[in-house]
Image (cartoon, rainbow, N blue to C red; front, side, top):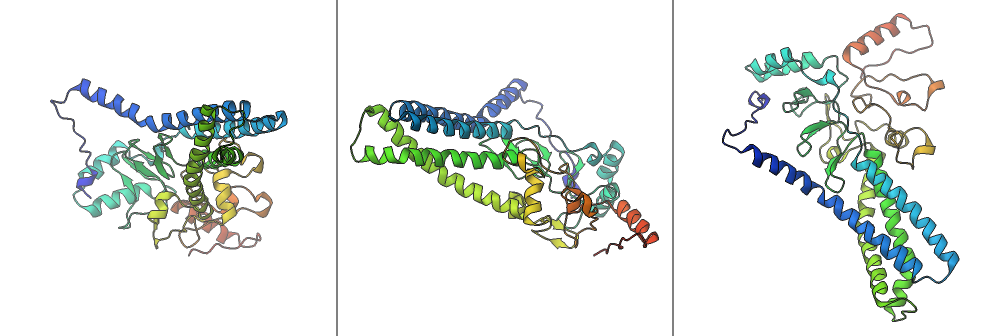
Length: 360
């Protein structure tokens, strides 16, 4: 552990600065290729559906209007969610988690792992963190020089620690995390509806073309519609499985990383450590206002650093019933100092209709 604290990213003195800059820009451009592929497919699907199917193939005016209205609603919501997922403002870890220079010097000069662990424990004693490493020490990132908040992880592609990191998605060229997880879920949902809508409306014409009844449509348009059906079917299968899996994760309040490796608490690993009930888990991602659940605007509860946990991992305090429905009413984490102060106040005032919280 002592050696891992050292930042050993040393540049070779003979390495050309121009080559390094060129490689950096080439890598950045390469990472946008999956996004450009998605945009290209959507652009082609617009031509195939709107021009070839709705304008050149469908004869009924009312049917054309209905298909075009529904199609453009799904397309707008799909692209809006996709845009927000890609260009979401991924905020950095707050400064209170970063080690100051004095603490960093102590950490680097410590000769033993126990000494380093003690320094980190003393620094993090007032931070609202409940998760630990496999060895039971404070989670620390030597590359970002900070104590990791709960559920935060370092992304090697973005080269930074990310709050509530789910995974780095190449299809959005961004980390899926606290700041855009709702947008990512809406992107998957609307993309799935978009593909299912194209499949269902193209299916009658696909069957007609398959039987050889071409009608008034030209041969080129026929192939566009048939190909659009198969592409929509292929994407619907993959999107359906991915969306269903993330719905499962939302219901159990887990990230993809936590699904593969359960978060570690003082009492051990617990894959359900952050679960506060299916509906509350849903509101933690989509917010407390049902009117905004289906709209890609940020409504997730909390700040990305502190999360409610189960009672066996940390003392929870609950607000009074009259302000229920908010994030605080789900239970919150507290630092050790806040827990001690709050417990002492409640013990001194036992007659106010409150019960002394139990530390389990």
